[in-house]
Amino acid sequence: MSLNSCPPSFKIVKLGNPDAERDALNAGIQAMLRCMGANSLPDPTGHAGEYLSTDGTDVFWAAGGGGGVVPTGTGFTHITAGVQDAAAKLVDTADVNNDQITYAKMQNVSATSRVLGRRSSGGGDVEELSIGQGLEISGTVLQAKLSTDGGNTLIMGSDNGLYVPPATAAITATSLTLPYAAKRHVVTVIDAAVTALSKIVATLGTAPDTAVNADDDIDLLSLTTIPTAGSFDVRMNFLTPIGGTLPINYMVG
Image (cartoon, rainbow, N blue to C red):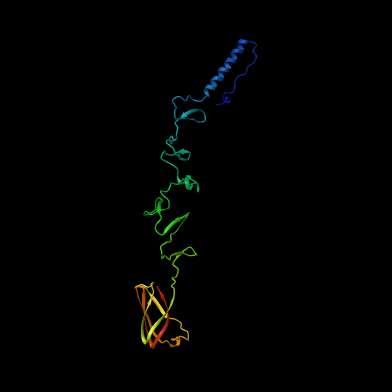
């Protein structure tokens, strides 16, 4: 309320009579008090929960809320078109700006070495996934886990892909002794790396021209190998009888 609502409707003049001046002043004060009383705020007694409203002329108490509710508990309330929603209403996705939720505001994972995804059928809430065999988390990187077991040949390539490098087998050179001249010979070669399941590839070695059996003197028809534990037999057939020393090369796989 403002005193502008009660402009003075009188003025004090010297009347020359003290009694008349006093009566005029009292009348002015009473008029001012009546105006102020008419324009003061309504009595709040009995109006708990209501709010002041006006129709443009008078000021009065009105029922509060406009359909809203008094907030209860803790947390956020939700406002739509200036009115608070029901108490169960919280924050909608549309109420949160992009990039506002930090990692720290997410719930904690249950243990280390977890990734987030979903294994349950269909769409739904995000779930924790554990790291399966063949994978590991190193620092902040999820990567393949290479076995340290002996014999493992799986490695990481230069393009960060997994691959098995081509197998390399050592070539062993040895000389066979053919005890006599014949078209067919069977000679045993001792090699601890050989097992009964080994695959052996054998070929004739290179013999110099000065050797007893030079390359031009050997008419080999066939050469096969039969593996056993710790050795293998070399079976050879020749077009013409041959004896003496014979070089061969072989690989064990």
